[in-house]
Structure formats: C-alpha cells, structure tokens
Length: 218
View 1: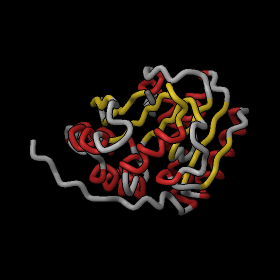
View 2 (view 1 turned 120 degrees about the vertical axis):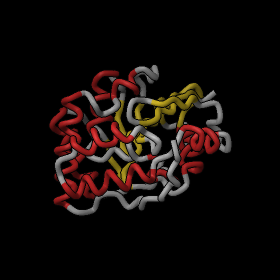
View 3 (view 1 turned 90 degrees about the horizontal axis):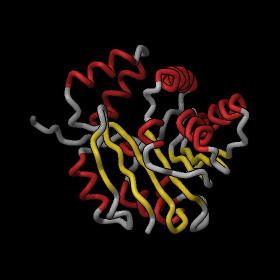
C-alpha cells in the first residue's frame, strides 16, 4: 500500500451553526449505533474518577463514558465556543452536571494532577503539535491516571473509507471527513511522536477505522 503524505488540518474546529447542527445529529446517530469509539475506551480500564475529555464536540463520547463508568465528574475542553454550547445542552439532556470550557489542548487550563483519566475521540488529527498535547495529558493526570485517545487512521483501507463516507449524508461533513482522513496519522507516525513525550510507554493499536492510544501515568 502506498502511504499518502499527511496534509495538516486547521484546529479551529466547527464554527458555523448549520454545520455544527449537522455534526451534532451525526454524532448522536453514531452514538445510537455504538460506532463512536466508546467501546474501545471502556476497554482501557479508565476507572470512575474525575474524567477529562479533549475536543468533546457535542459531548456524546464523554457523556456516555461518564454514565457507564460512574465517573465522579466530567470536564470537557473544546476550542469551539459553539460546540461548548451544544455539549452543555446535551449534558442537560443526560441529566449530568458536566463542566465544559473553551481552551486549547496544547495549554490545558487546569492545574497539575487534576484528573484520574483523560480521553479524546476524533480530534488528534487537528492538534497543531501532538507532542505538546500528550505532555499536557501527562501533566493534568494524577499518578496512576489513565488515558485513551482514538482517531482516524490515514492508511485505513479504501473500502472502509468509502463505507464511512456513505454514512455521512451531509455534504459539508463529507468534505470535512476527507480532510480529516488526510490529516490523520499512521501507527508508526504516532509511535514516533509518543517517544518524544512523557507518555512514551503508551500502546498504539489499529482499530477497524483508526487508531487507539492508551496508557497510564506511571
């Protein structure tokens, strides 16, 4: 297989209300189908402590995780104020007192050792400097805290990419999916990046459509 070169994607997130509404509906549908990566994260033995989600978007992944794990608290850090408002609305529907803040994953607005677990789904490819984000994850985790990051994989088989493209019915989201896939990392690329961080012992494994990076702060 010929590996295509990675094409960076902007990390400004979704700022258009119409596109944000489409994405919220798609994320809700993926949640209902069980295709939003929650199962992979549940296998990471995250525990029921304070949970931080990076790039929560509409919030369904963190909300589902917190509900199934019985998390003591749920916090989300998102760079799009529009998505923060949607996540807060969805948290209210779940009946959860989640705390969503606007901020950058490269400089998380939390003290050292604030969380027992950190997760992120589908935002890794948008991080301008992943090495900085992984070090920030290490910083805000308590000793023994766990993390799990999932995302697309650029070298996913073409037929799987087409399957995902067919599931996304909205044209703006299809365009976004194509750019996100082009910006996604391969397993060797991520392993090399992690070796430059405090999370160098993290496990990187391929999933059906992407990658799963899990580990513990030793």
